[in-house]
Length: 286
DNA sequence: ATGGTCGGTGTCCGA
Image: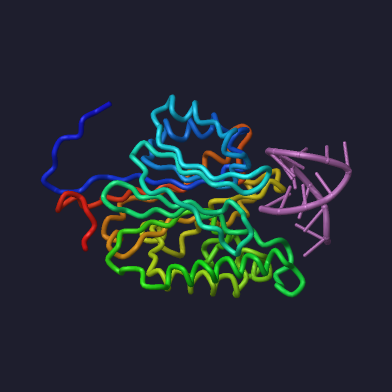
C-alpha cells in the first residue's frame, strides 16, 4: 500500500476496466491475474453466469477488491462491478421488461456515476421480423438511448462501460464489407448506437486515444482456432465518458494478450485511465 | 466457403 503524495495538480488517476468474462466461476483466477497485473480501480464484468449466492467473492477480496456489486442469474447474462474504491448507491434497471441481469449502476468517489451494461448479442439473422433476439437487441439500444436522452444534467460526470455487442466503426472490425450483414456491425445497429451516444453525449474514450484508422478489436471468436493469425476480431466492448470527463482521458489499452491465456474468454479486458480533477473537494460541478 | 468452438446445463440454448 503506497500513500499518494498530495498533488497540487488536483487530479487523481482512475483506472477503469470492462471485460466479458464468459463465466466468472470458471475464470476467477484470470480475473485475479488481470487485477494484480494491471491494477484497475474498478473492473466491470459481463456474462458472469452465476446467481449472487454463488459469486466467488473471496478470491477478489483476497487481492484487495472488497467492494463488489453483483447481479446475476442462472446460466445466462449477469453483471458485476469489482472495485477497490467505495461503491455507493448501487442499483440495477430491468431493460425491456425481461428480468435479465444486464445492467448495474453505482457511484464512485467524486460523484462519478458508473453504468455497466451487457447488451443482448442479437442472434444470427439481422432482421427483427424474423429474429426475436435481434428485435430485443434493437429495443434494448433504443431504451438506453431514451434513458440517457432524458434530462441528463449535462455537467454530470458519468462513465458507461460494457459489452455493447456493437462494433460501430469500420476500423472496429476485420472487414467492414464482409460484416455489413453480420449482427454487431449492421447499419441499423450502428445507427442506434450513434443515437445512444448522441443522446447521452457520450465520448468513446478508447477512440480518443487510438483514433481511426487504427484497427482495434476486443473479441475474437472461439470458432477460429488460429484467432491470432487470422485476427478476424471485432471491437464490441466499450468505455464511454460524459463531456466533463473527456479532458481527463489519459490512457486506453485493449489487453489482447489475455486472449492467449489458458482457458481464455473470447473477449479481452478494455482498460481506460482517467486523470479526474479533484478540485472543490472532488465533487462534481453542480 | 456459410463451417467452426465455447460454457452451463444438459441430451440443447445462447454466444
